[in-house]
Length: 207
Length: 244
Image (tube, rainbow over all chains, first blue to last red; front, top):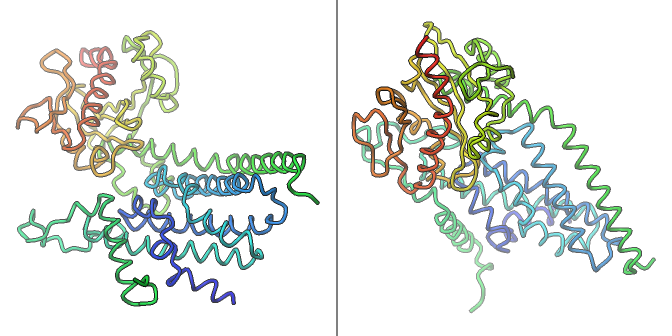
């Protein structure tokens, strides 16, 4: 059963491509692979532990302040992540700047708490949270891979396009600056969704 | 138990908030020294980079140690000067440029405390590294300017920003952009002119101008203001040094 909870969000119930949750940060931090992966790891930890804590507390929470309690727990976790990044991954935290704080507003986290953690036991909730974070991370990594490769000609800041290919060095190739801008992230995500739906046809809505 | 009663709700919220506050205070407190050392390292690295030093920082296995040892080796002297350019007491490294910027903006010159870092290169060349600070489009921008010992010719610069537009204004932080400033002069004969940032491109051979960033007009203008305002405060110091 745990296996099913874990595997579903990675592909057939992917938070970005199927549930369309958490798109905002997917657009913002996918210019380069490294910050995208730091972001993915941060979101995974926050969704996992937010789901775990909310699931433990689920029977004690006064219903009227349910959303506020969720926000407090999520915000606290995000601040912890932000502080840890500032201490141990300073460069990455500078690149992510405000987007770490904006994990709080990532619909994915509250979406999973409301849809799953509040009605299920702690361990399945933790797995569900982590798996959704990973599903989010996979899409982020794919999009960042495409954008960094085409937009900057590098992967993890290491140049992968041969130097002599560039127009400046007498070649024929030029980096596509459009891929650095947010609109291309949306288009790349669109392409990812297209590919996913042509692989598993059951995701396509009936006319 | 009735989890929907008013009393329960109030107590629940209060306990939760106090608990969370305690956890966060503990986390922030225990990570503070580590974070501060990262900030200090970055400051040292910027000062060194303005003099084209510490080029291996990205590859160093322990960045903090590497930068600290390079700083120790090349920054031979640092001191604080006042608005007349005379050395006063104070630790140059601890001066907050944001406060100095506020003082400059409100024309409270008497209270200025301006840090100067003297950098001696391997061949014995003496450089004066001075900080600059200003406001960009979205937040603060700052940097360091390394001047040759004539207090006029720029040896190198480094700029950084809090959150300028990625791909546009944020380009001021790139090495490519900083390279434009090398060899520019901040004095035209005896008059302080700073370095202008020219939209549409500076004329070739113009000693007092560099290209602006297309699409980053406000950041470019801010950079020009920042250079003028920050360097102007040091003019008395530069004059004293050149007369010596």
